Length: 120
Image (cartoon, rainbow, N blue to C red; front, side, top):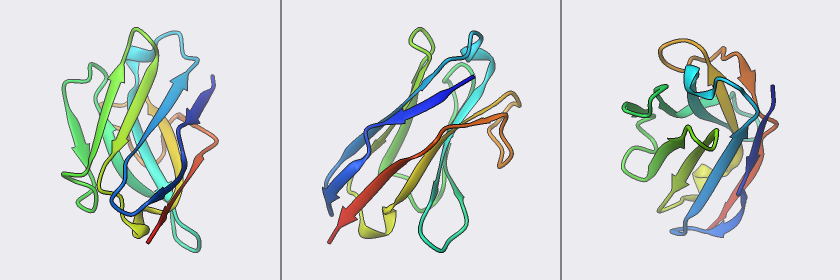
């Protein structure tokens, strides 16, 4: 199983980025999916999660209203649209797949991460 993130990069504060995570999972719709991030010197933290069907989404308070998670089960892909980016959003962003009802901090699979840098 592989989770491959893409879409990271350097953006100015107030800008937008869309991250993608392509999953090589035959039963992609059997997994809740999520995004986490880790800034230098900090612990990895939850950012956003989406249910197996895509009908339910949930967010960390720090990104609520700015970030949107979505998934396309036909393409085995989960997305994270990030708007109104702030310098404090700078981190490595990781995709996660979890076979439980909601994504947890111990998912079944992690991606390798993609760097997001927001300049002020």
